[in-house]
Image 1: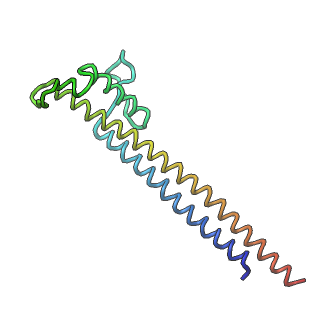
Image 2: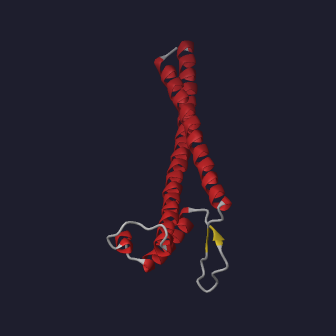
Image 3: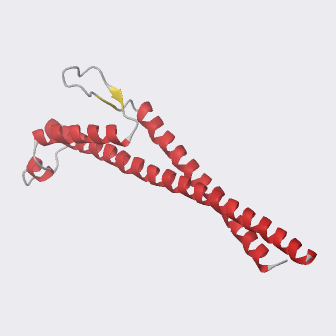
Length: 161
């Protein structure tokens, strides 16, 4: 077997490998996205988008809505105290103080939502990388197959001459 045919088979195998790995990346991204959205739905994490209608809430199921919700909570939390240190005023945390308890609960939910924002971003990176790997793999498979066919035809023509 000629070296061109061997090289084309190597490119073909690498293309198939890229398609498989890209599919895994994309599948993991979709799976994790579904997991985060499902967890948010189970916990009924919502955001009232219209201040005039606070009872009309929208489910948080993407990075933009999670970011908006976290920023809203941060604004409300800062209306209690500008920072955690300001809240404590140099004293230790008092879990029996309703103001301090409300503040740290807001911090907890805010951090949960910012973590969701980061997670959604990482999911998009995984899905985009997977999609790119699939496209690249398909191009490599096509290239390897084409070169293999040309090498085979060239070899046949050379033998006939």
